[in-house]
Length: 172
Image (tube, rainbow, N blue to C red; front, side, top):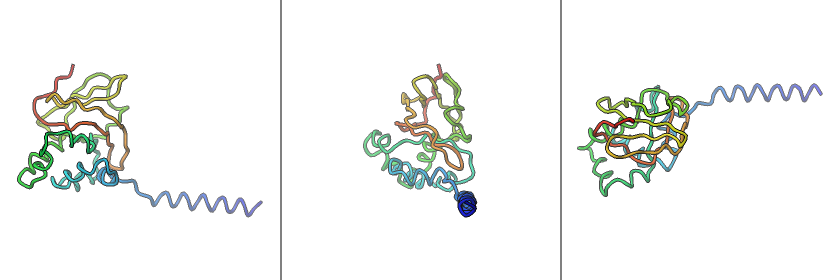
């Protein structure tokens, strides 16, 4: 009986110490490990934002899946990935990032303006019984299809459309 108790105690201590060594992944590491975000990761890398989004944060990223990028007009992604378009690409990506750790529970009910890192623009985020949507003012309303992927430097909300800076979104 004492052997089992000692063995159990040793196992618990080993598991606890092992868990303390484990490190959570940051937003970029999580996105890079998920094939659904390969276009986003390529864009973040081309814009030179990978180091920033790997930093301490906090960040909330509204992360478009590959299908969202594929739905843009033909040639758009390829054009944005060219070095001469880095500024435009950076603006589009920063439009998807908030400098808070904003979980779905932290989004207030109703429609509210949010200021992404692209500070010259505003997003209208609406939370209802149907879910969370993000309106960029260009006529694009993205649905949050997966919420609250936790990272050690923030949270990822997966969206089904690419947000494009332009006119200010109208919150109703």
